[in-house]
Image 1: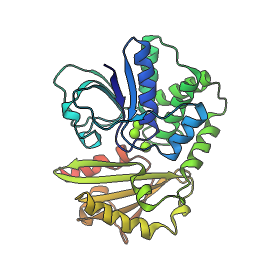
Image 2: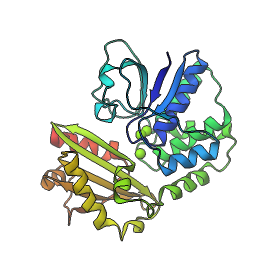
Image 3: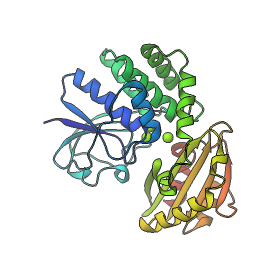
Length: 306
Ligand code: MG
Ligand code: MG
Ligand code: MG
């Protein structure tokens, strides 16, 4: 029976590429594993897969009775519904430790770096396994995506080192240019509905019994949202009610200006203002220097909500 490897719900490039890279490594080590995904792939991930000639992993959302490895998450809220009935063999992740527990000992590679694929690269090195050229290219793109071209405060020396080594294996000289091309693909938001945009990179967190959803869109120029903001806010309110959420936040991140326009729909705007130390105007505020949901938003919300 094959062991399944998958990333979080509403998968990003790190989750998809991570399932593929970790599965390749595990198979080289003699295990029988299959990469899967919990949801649709984003335009950015489609660009990466096509550039390096890979197919998306198969969609699978139920894992009762199966052996699994998790990559890029350890939160129940980002898991398949029946995760408690799966047998978790291991976790590879770079987020805060979530609320998933196991009944058996597990292999755990959790590091405070900018990308899960940086850790997978270190696992390849640890085991002395060679990385195929095109897989290396995809892992490099996942690192450039998660670290926002090394600009995110989550980016570490280990990420830049892994990225450069992967670029060499992939024989890509100008990896920054390829990264920029990827972010330009990511910035094409005009052809998507408000709901597609809100949920494209969206995570629910349970904090003190409240569900707080936080989405993020990273673009090269925030003006693409100018004519869209009212509709986004309206649909955020709808999406909040549908999921019985306390709050929905949407970070519109400008990767050139290095900061985010935060949109807030909440049962308690005051609490969000307190948590982040800001004052909202019409449910919005510019957060200078804020690029990272996991490092610059979630910890402050958790402190205020617990
Ligand atoms: Mg991710
Ligand atoms: Mg990641
Ligand atoms: Mg991200």
